[in-house]
Length: 139
Image (cartoon, rainbow, N blue to C red; front, side, top):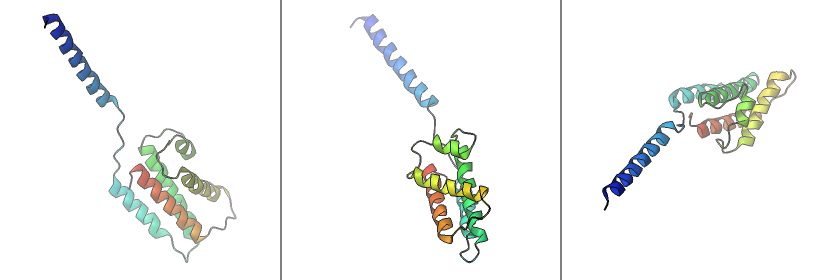
């Protein structure tokens, strides 16, 4: 083979290797959560739900929502509000509609005075938040 052809092939291979390395170095990596911290925090929220104490219903929903929002921020999902972050979360959740439902319930709690929450609503919201945190890899 001609020396020029061999040099050309070697140059192409080297350029290809550089391109592959550059792509690997610049691709966005998934965020690594401190899962132990998130599990501890979520367990505290979960344990705060008391069937015999309706005052805990709203607190657990708000706590679950705050923890999920913290995880969204930590994962680098852009947005000024949790709603904006949920819109930009793409396919990160197994059931985005359920996450929206739980978040909307949190908003109702925050903005309405006479909301009569049930234990079942609070427990369901916690199940949704837990799954969302799992989907993100936080717990």
